[in-house]
Length: 339
Image (tube, rainbow, N blue to C red; front, top):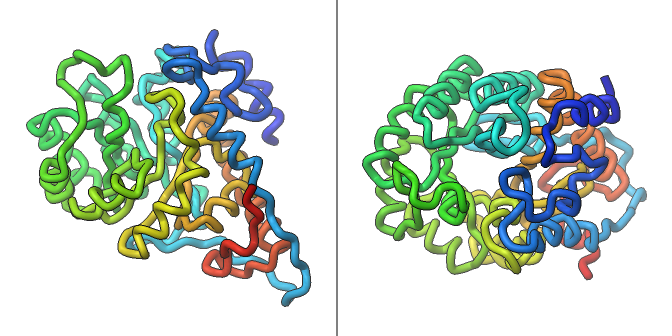
């Protein structure tokens, strides 16, 4: 199965909202919620993709001829590529009932682990979603990152016990989910967190804690103060705040301010291995890719996931070879041209 076949099959079963576009650029679904779209006009999701395309890579083939090493070490684990599948929730609401959160996470976690990367799993108002995700990660030998929504502290405490039972190598919280319209006025309640509350949550996790949803230097420094081991520069795929900057626009200044004191991940509109290269050149240690993994699962199950990972990996490997980077650590800002 190749990626075009994955897309073709996905279009038969993705539901009425997602079009399984050749490139997931946010235009066709724009402000469709339920669905993969965004609040407001959908401007942020579209800009996420476009801003990566405005960055160019600098070709340089005057270097040693070698096979690039794409491996990443993070929190004591070694991964084949510096990329992870991002968390998705309520897939049967936003896509179609071919999958629900339980079956989706089962496929994604196992397929990613077998392909040498890891999946971030989603959370939901149904407590069984996190239970099933934790079990999927446990079966994968801890190769997964359970991502908890910013519920109230009592609920988070219960969720973190599940995180520990999974044996996950890290845990995350998508603090930007506080802006999701379908989480407003829900039980359990979800919302923004103070630095003090975030510090308590980081302690509860018991493993390296990743704060997803950072878009400013100020926010990054708050996460660092709270004890985060990593952040994800993210605007929740453009879903939670219209007219927000694209992640590519803020990544470099956030990475510089962090100064190596925590790991930097980024998501939002990253759709190719070339985009992964650009993100690393701007200071990221790794990236998350989200919506296209939904297409991969719907279009080909575990085989679709493996196919998509290999596509991204080969694109990254080729870009490294053509730009003179033998290892991920060799990728630097002078290998790209910013607008």
